Amino acid sequence: MVFDFSSSSEYQAVEDLFEMLRIYEKENNKLAHLWNKDVRRISAQQVKSAKNDNLAEKFYYLNKRSLLFDAKEDFDAYLQYIEFEREPEKRFYLPRRKQILSIVKALQGLEDDEYDLLTLSMPPGTGKSTLGIFFLTWIMGKYPQSCNIASAHSDKLTRSFYDGVLSIITDPEYLWADVFPGTKIARVNSKDEIIDLDRPKRFPTLTCRSIDGSLTGATRCEKYLYADDLVSGIEEAMSKDRLDNLWNKYTNDLKSRKKLGCKEIHIATRWSVHDVIGRLEQQYSDDPRARFLAFPALNENDESNFDYMYGVGFDTKYFHDMRDTLDDVSWRCLFMNEPIEREGLLYHEDELRRYFELPKEEQDAIVAICDTKDRGKDYAFLPVAFVYGDDYYIEDCICDNSNPEIVEARLIEILLRYKVQMCRFESNSAGGKIAEKVQGEVKKRGGITHITQLKLRIPAVNEIL
Image (cartoon, rainbow, N blue to C red; front, side, top):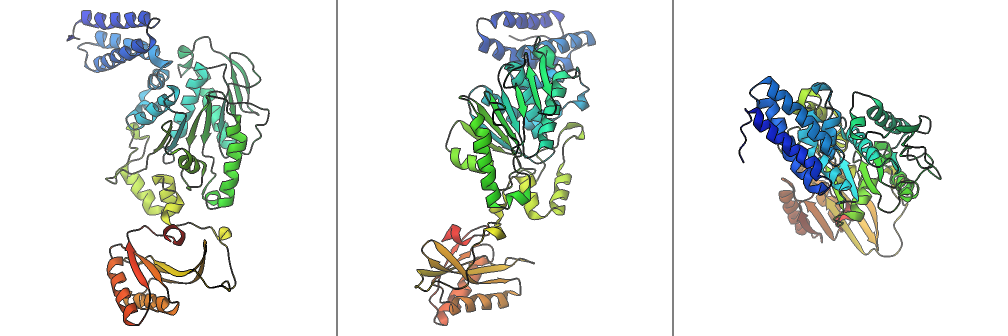
C-alpha cells in the first residue's frame, strides 16, 4: 500500500494501525512490536517532510507514543523515548545513535537471551559507561524485584554509577516514569550505594560496589552483573601478579554472586591480555553465547569512529593529536584497544627470573631471534638464549641503533661467539636482506647458525621457540 502523507486521512490510517497493534499486543507481543517499528519509522520521517505544521505535530506525537509502546521491550526505543522532551543537543543517545547502534543491539541481544556475556572496549569519553548506566535503569524498571550488581576498580567510579542511575530514575527531565508507571523508589542509601525499587528487599534492585569492597552477605545477582573498568590503570596492568589477584577477586567476589541465568556485561580499557576481559575472551572465545566487541578510535582509513553530532564526540583531528601527544603504549591501550603485550611489553621487571651462571649440564640448544633495525631511531635487537628444557636463559644480547654496517657486524659476531644453532629474523622491509647477508657471512666464517625468516611484530623468544 502506498500512503499519501499530505492527507490527514492517511495519517489517520497510520494512527489506526498503531491502535490496532496496541490491542494485538495481548495476542502476539512479538509481532505487534515488530510491526510497530514501521509506525516509528513512518512517523519519524513524516515529522520532517509533512506538508504543514499541523500534520507534522500529529506525526510527532504519534512517534512519541509508538516509542513508548516499544520502550519496555526495545532498548533502542527506550533510549529515544526517555530523552524525548530534552533539548536535542543535550540528549545523550540520538547524537551518538549512528555510531553506537550496534552496541545497543548487542545489549538487546543479551536481554533477548541470545548471549550470556558481552564485553565492550571503546576509547575514553565516547559514552560507553553512560550507555551502561542507561541500560541498568532499563533493566531495573523491567525487573524491580530482581537484584543486580555494578562494580568497578574504585568507590569513586561506582558512586558515579549510583548517582547516574538515580538521576535518570528521579529527574523529570527523563521520562523513565512513563515507561515504568507505578514503579517507585522504595529505598536508597548513598553510603552503601544501593537502590531498591517497589519495596525494600534483602538484596536491593541495584548494589554498586568496588571490586575491593565487600559483597559477602550484602547481595546476590539475579539479572545482570555489570563491571566497568576493573583495572585501575597501566601500573596495575603491567603487573601479572596484580592482574592474577584481580582475576581472583572477580571470580571469588563478583562472579560467585551470580545466580542461575544471570548475564554479564564488562566494559573496560584493554590494558593487558591478562585483564578480566582478556581471560574471559580466552575462556569463551568459541562460545556462541559470548560476544566480544572492540571499537578503536580510528578506523581502517585513519578516520574517527566517534565523530558525534553537536560536537559531543571526537573528530579525526582530535585523535591524530592524541596519537602524536601520548606515548605509543598509552595510545594503543586507551584509544585503539590493543593490550600492551601486543606491542612487545611482555615482561615487567618484578616478573623476570634471574640467574648468576648457566646450569652445569649441557644445554638442549642455543637459539636467537632478531628484530631487525628498520629506519630512523629504530633498534635492532637480538637476544641469545641457552635452552634447558622449558627454560630459556638469556646469556647475551645486541640492542643497537647504529649504522646498518655496524649493527650487521655485531649480529654476525654474537652468532659466531656463542655458536648459535638457530636464529629467526623478522622479515620486515629490511629484515630479509639483512638475514641473507648475515647468513652468508656466518657460513663464510665457519659458523653453524641456521637462519630462518618470519614476518612478525616485535617477537619474543618464548612465543617463537
